[in-house]
Structures are given as structure tokens and as C-alpha cells.
Length: 59
Image (cartoon, rainbow, N blue to C red; front, side):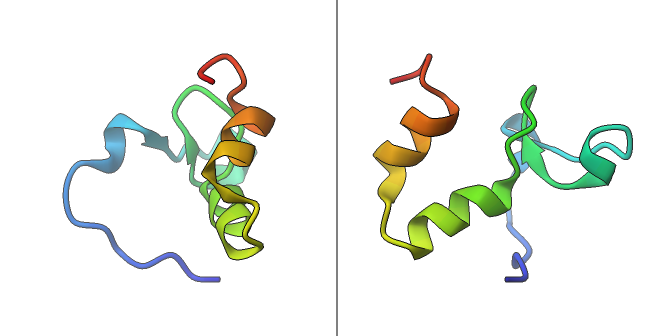
């Protein structure tokens, strides 16, 4: 899936660095790709399951 351009300042939550996962767009200070978030939503696993799986310290 290709991620469309986003208006606004997404740099507060997302990061892309060639040194981290070859520049894959990830959530800031993690190695969790943004694509993983979309994959959870597509398979109807939902936001809560995504957060529990990858950001359990927030839930």
C-alpha cells in the first residue's frame, strides 16, 4: 500500500532516517513502521490491538 501525502506537521510522531530501518517511515523513537499501523486497521484488528502490541506502555 502506498501512503498518500499528509498535510500538516507529522514530524512530531513520525520519523524517517536512513540509519533506522533503511529510512522506512516509523513512529518517533521506535522501530514500529507506519505501514504496520495501516496493516492492523486493514485487517480490522483495530487501534487498541495495535497499541497493545507495539506501545503497551501507553495503554
